[in-house]
Length: 345
Image (cartoon, rainbow, N blue to C red):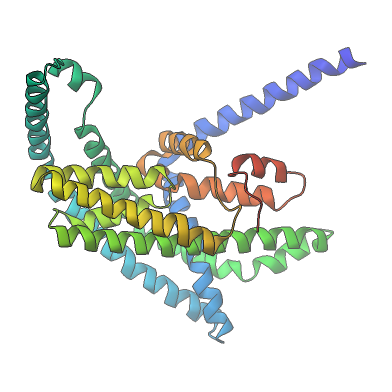
């Protein structure tokens, strides 16, 4: 009997793997269509908390949704203007920064040669390219600007999602034969997701504002751009702060010298240690994190599928999957494997 069941199990595994390959290929092929909807869902989940708060204050649902979306329009317009002007200015200055980096690298090699350490400049530039991180940031911001180009479609989708959200629990109860078993799982998933994204957004906003203010006080070029980048990449724990800090510290080094670069790096470290390692875990509670390996793999996976915006959304998407898996007893073990190993509060 075991011999008869073995091929069927192998076939099942092959069918599942083939289905995953087709889904991954479909996501990559439909990138231009999926990105606006993913951004819309992301904004809708963030906007759900203020909508619920306004409804508790006896504001009609339609008015609450319109007020929240109006606030989003203002924020998106500011972001679009900031991304457009900053990316243009940064792209124009990029060749100058790269040339200055090459000059500083040549001076460093000359100094090392005087100390008796001979390193080939061609070999070093082949394997170590400091300007690569700056080009990556320029591509990421350009990709974000392209995603925000569909602002009208995104906002219309957000409005319909938020208007539909109030009636969705009632539909869920009607759709399932045993709503008492299904609804608590969905409610737990929705509440955890809203809470995670709300706290993460406020922490990210505080991170971006403090970084922008600190770099502006130091006199580093494009402080608003680096603040925006710190805000966006703060959704990617651990790795995001490193990626966000690297170009700003390089610009500080090129523009103002090693002292300012060290102070810039120190500002990033202090902000991320205080907000990321002290304030955020205290607000979220234990167990609402991802392991560093999962963060790294999700960054590569979603970045390769959805481009630069996929890198920003990689951890929120993976965290959504983890929270969904935690909502069911049958799949909780997978969520534990994706997490940090700490017990859930």
